[in-house]
Length: 117
Image 1 (cartoon, one colour):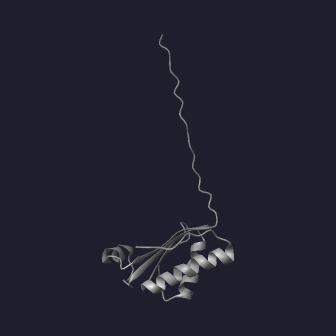
Image 2: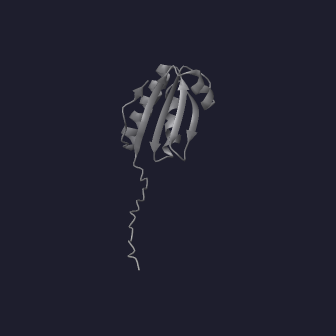
Image 3: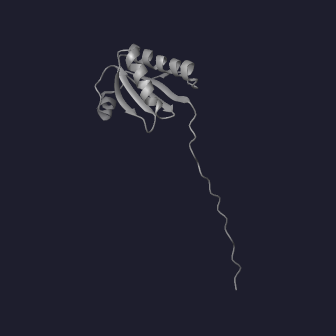
């Protein structure tokens, strides 16, 4: 009889435990027209992208952004915390700054610097 080697397998379970945070705040200035087309939004000059947790914060962020600057909501998903806005470059930057500043000061969120490409 042969000796059976018992193989052990480590099992890792990953779980997302969202804190109060803005994980991405990014401006795409002058994106290629393909990007607008694939997103299904009108070309306005710039796109702003936010990812947030808890995910429902996307609703608050979209409200702040649209009340602060001349931007439109291109995409809002309260189940993933994703927000895409569009407008001219200055309006998108203004909106993202208002969102990150307000979430930080009012709701004690951890935020990231606004980046730009």
